[in-house]
Length: 463
Image 1 (tube, one colour):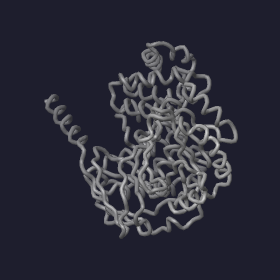
Image 2 (image 1 turned 180 degrees about the horizontal axis):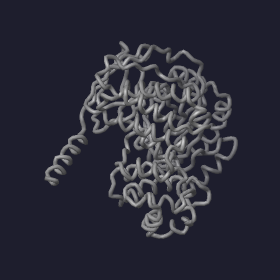
Image 3 (image 1 turned 120 degrees about the vertical axis):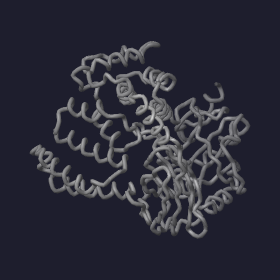
């Protein structure tokens, strides 16, 4: 009988993990012809952004697309740099309305600064719709915090949490959404942690040791990240261990896992390895630790972990730590050049490339570009020069570069392809980047023409 029950459970779990199509349609007045991008976090420790789909809002302001989902995810829907966040569940249908915006009605400044929240409404939501449940719960929770802040944080009045739990049980007693159940549970767990409702060992037993890991649940992972923040430096069992020697050598992963097992909370292999990943992320950002040694352990987890979720998290950590670092692939892009023909970075391989991000309204950009002419005359047979205009309008870029008869190198325009600015983390202009002939980052950011670019180029040519 036990075997039969276990088999049924396994089959049910397998069915739950089978991808199901999720359909999304909607309207976005004012965004006609704009590019829409939907992204999610590859994992909820690094929050490394993963693109799910890129589509266009049609000429009437409508859009539609579908995604194959095996689990509930939290997504960001973006138009230009403006965005809204919401949950998507497998097999569901969503009808969205994004309130009208004048996407082009602003002066051209850094889009990282001018981004706004899109006002998104889910029309005709189904019963037990997750976003509505979470919005209702968050409203109650935030009202509770405002009303009882002093009682919770100053007086540690635990009875207030009991009262909240009773109220929530009364309101959501018919809830059958498992994601929401976990979301509510771990939101309260975070409150119990902050108000010291339980001691740390009791919290771990109740919410980690005796429960499965919910990698995809925002509140579970928020509680996990909070509970295990700087854990090895505060744990009674671990804080006396010198972890630096354990990072050295081919068996570093084994030694670290064995050391963490000294903590009674971390006897479970899966939880212990997840805490190790969280710890390695902190080690990497701590000056006392060797970054290459930390990366080596993370690479071992990518290759050898028996938990697929950990392979993903470790892989995302490597992407995060090595993004735009020398020797890593330069993010590809395809943008229109001054002849309005698509030009991709990939097509330029075989020769080093100097790319520089600029705008017509950036005075510093224009003075630096005036200096590029001499570099182009001297080195254009050895390296490709590519100016990337971040002006919203192609016509504005074209008018400017056509007036500059000595700007004979290639130019492309970003327009609505704001993902290029994200990929290269362009926070200010101008930004120069050197890419080697294999398409890998050579220097990011490279020096400007007025302050060392020629030395960068000569070093590149000598290698």
